Length: 70
Image (tube, rainbow, N blue to C red; front, side, top):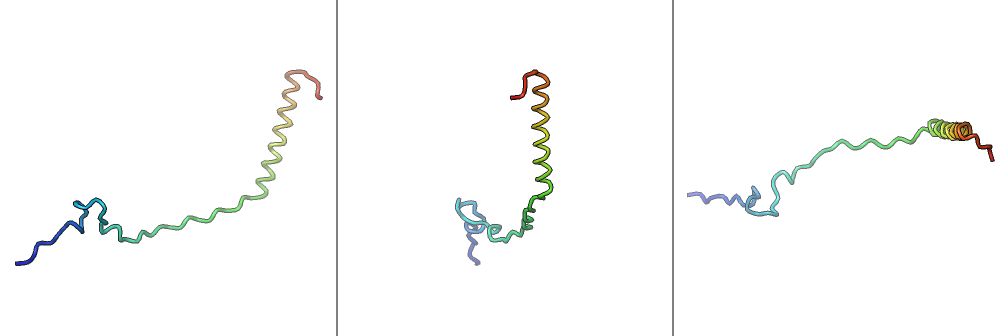
């Protein structure tokens, strides 16, 4: 008569730290694409836009308050 198989090591039900069969599987993942360098033209445009916004805000402030420029 064949000996009964001990299921304790294959299923992990009786052993809290036992490994299952899926722990042995290699998981293939698509590599993340490399980060692109920022476009220097966009950086220049952003700086120019910020400068224009600052001057427009200063002009609007002095138009509303009527305070003379220092």
